Length: 119
Image (cartoon, rainbow, N blue to C red; front, side):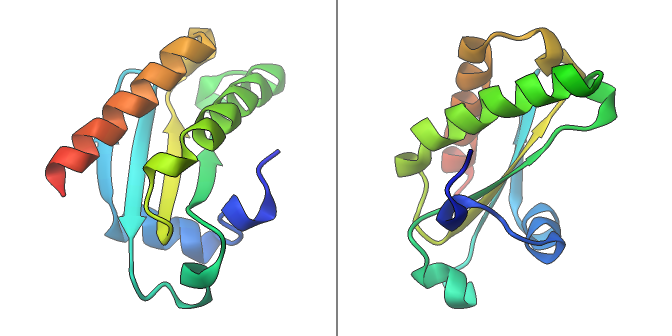
């Protein structure tokens, strides 16, 4: 489970991250990244905030929850690579259903590297 200080907590935060942020995709995930220095009280929270989007296109409920757990562990392990005031949404694509945790980690890392080149 993501600690509350690292969760995007409402739909407005998800919407702002997806609409205003930068995006980088890989075969299993799309990473939406939004760093705003004036994120209000979120900038004073304890680090980056993450959200996961795992739609029905990924698979049935069991598959979606497995993918969510894997992605949750990946982003928590990588949280130090993101600026403290950033918002990140990780959207799983259908191939994520058959990907291993290591493949998901590699795809998230590759997407993050691509975003770092864009900044």
